[in-house]
Image 1 (cartoon, rainbow, N blue to C red):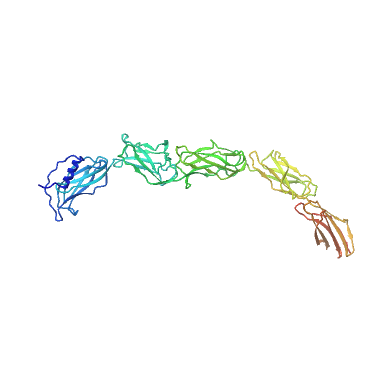
Image 2 (cartoon, rainbow, N blue to C red):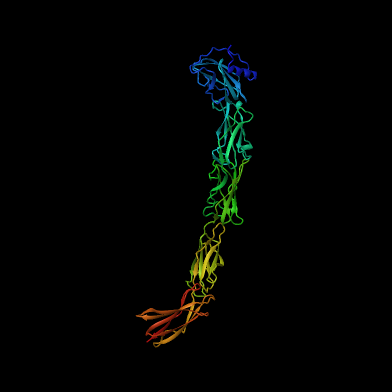
Length: 559
């Protein structure tokens, strides 16, 4: 009697262990042996590593000799078994297959239990073979959408998880939906989605998550799993990074000719951006509030509908924002308030500086009467013209070389035509005037161009005579000048000038310049050594205090 094969002994051992039920064994005809060597055992080949629960899969069984070469002369039936694996397995199956040229092909083999299935192949006279295959659930998870490799804190795109069957189709039957939970690695308590939950039930085969956020970081991965159903394997997505978020003024407030209490020419627009400065156009949550960061004491900010705006498409767009009072150096701060639970921090932003200059205004100052320069002790009449009309206060300011800072001397009120007239006090020194509007009533400050009223020096010469004085050649005459007004800071300087009449034309001959003494006096002696008709005079030279003046002349005839 022929001894039992290894396959028979293996099955006997499995039966004894209670793994499978006992199977009837049939005696098979003796196999023919090929010239390459008789078959001694079987191999299971071309078996995929996994198959879907309940779906057919295919593999082959070959008869091989002691060296592993296929015995192509071997033919006849074999027995095919599946045994339970360590975690789960297929239902025990007995299938008869037939070898042809040492090879048998198994078609339409299926397992119905999720887990590791052990498949055995055996013949009456050859050693048996075992192989394993992973049987996966006929329900599988798949990410429909998943965060981009670099995403803002509010994940973009938001994740969706699909429940599909073994053929890849969505499982839409309401009775077969699943509760899908998202987790993140590395784990962080800051991971949350709308409603504070990271679990969603599939609808029509898809679990759609919204409002999911993560703090800034790198190397995040999302895992989706179906709770309480170990037959549906979890899935883990690709690694992604979360950029930090910040606010940025994409349109600065202010603009030219900003008027107190009126809408700024340029209204602020604030964007929610990632760390690279990319506006998060998919964000439609959160609130941005504007406050004054800098400006005049008591400054106010009002915007149409309030100073807060909801974020839409990543932007908070403001309208009707107005500042008061008039001033320079305004700036605004934008801060973010979340509307979703667990949102990460968004850094605030401060705008560029801007001014609220009010309505432009213009003021001019002109001479009305009395030509200039004037003599010491005289007055001038000045006219103010203001561009914006009546009843506006205009300060007249003046300065001199002795008092070089503008000081207000009087405040006038414009008439119905925007005019005002000012008569100066009697002046001793040259004086610079300007008209100043301080601003107010929605009007910008304005200052006229400066206007100088020049005041001549005083100068006398002694002796002083009328007509011609005849002297002999070689006569020396002495002339004394007195130059004023004295300012107590710098002594005046004078120039003695001599002219001769030549062919009926007065022609310059010579001059000499002197600094006066503290009393304003200077003395010059001249010898008339040539015949002719001469005249002499003193010139009081101009400086920062007064303008040039001349003394009366003395005529001298030398025969």
